[in-house]
Amino acid sequence: MKKQSLFARDSIYMLIAAIVIFSLRWTLPLLGGYSELATRMLIFSILVLGFDILVGLTGYLSFGHAAFWGIGAYICGYILLHFTQNILVAMILGVLIVSIIAFLLGIITLRRHGIYFAILTLAFAEMFYYLALAPLQKWTGGDNGLTGIKTPQLFGLELSGLAMYIFVGIWTLIALYTARRIKNSPYGLMLRAIKSNEERLTFTGINVFRYKVMAFLISGIFAGLAGTLFAAYETYVPTESLHWTLSGEIVIMSVIGGFGTLIGPMMGAAIVLYLENVLSAITDQWNLILGVIFMSFVIFLPGGVMSLSKQLRRLFSRDQVPANRTESQGGD
Image 1 (spheres, rainbow, N blue to C red):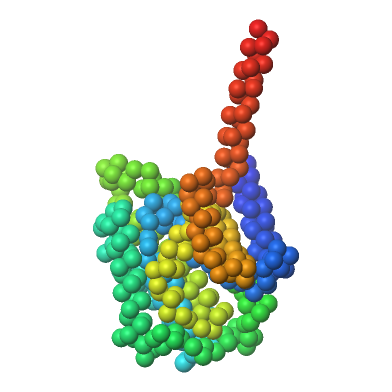
Image 2: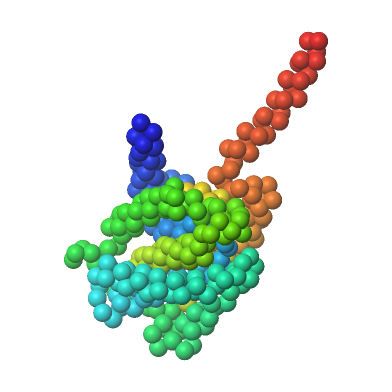
């Protein structure tokens, strides 16, 4: 009976997610956005989903996730440009190469904790960024980025506009379902135990390092997948795809949405992209406004958008308690 109720709850959850994902292209213009922005939001949602598996579950903050996004985008774009327009072939090769790199970087960086781990991931990401700028510019395009990418195809159908939106939406739904299964599995429970008390978990005899590397690998795969979709959608890969500013933007999206909630960072990605596009059309100082919004979340709502209902309940419960005490004292 319990399994049936859990299955029903997950089914309703995914149904609601599917409705939101596949209706975003038409609801966004009603809020002042534009339809093509919906596809970008979904692509970034996959990116922050993977980021949340690493940071939200294990507590290991990475400042180098732009590396996986950028590498996936470059590999996919290069294959589409020079070899085949088959998007599945380009995506598979892109994700495969990112997986290998994420595994190797995980083995190296996860031997350190806290700020040292974060700095290591940032350093490696910047190494890839400068490799794309100079030594590998013959393949990456250097400062100009990778241009001239052909429109991808799926079984002979060109993916652009609505077709690309549906394609990205399907991958977003798959990514969300996979992330939920990981979080609610015994493996996800082990990752949360690492975040809670890694040292105590190590004393039980569990190979904690293996779990951390696997979380890093899965997170990198999500980022690589998002990067390949980005290259296929934009048919262009800017060098900034590997820059630390993108890694910082990922952190901002996750903080605004709420770490460890999966759906929260996805909402954070949508909010940040919406604000970037709407505010940039109104004022040149949109970065300043976005920074104020980010600081406001950190100070007043550290749990992100997903903690808003909890904070409101606490606020109202505090207001009600003194009132109840006053009434009881008056009755006495």
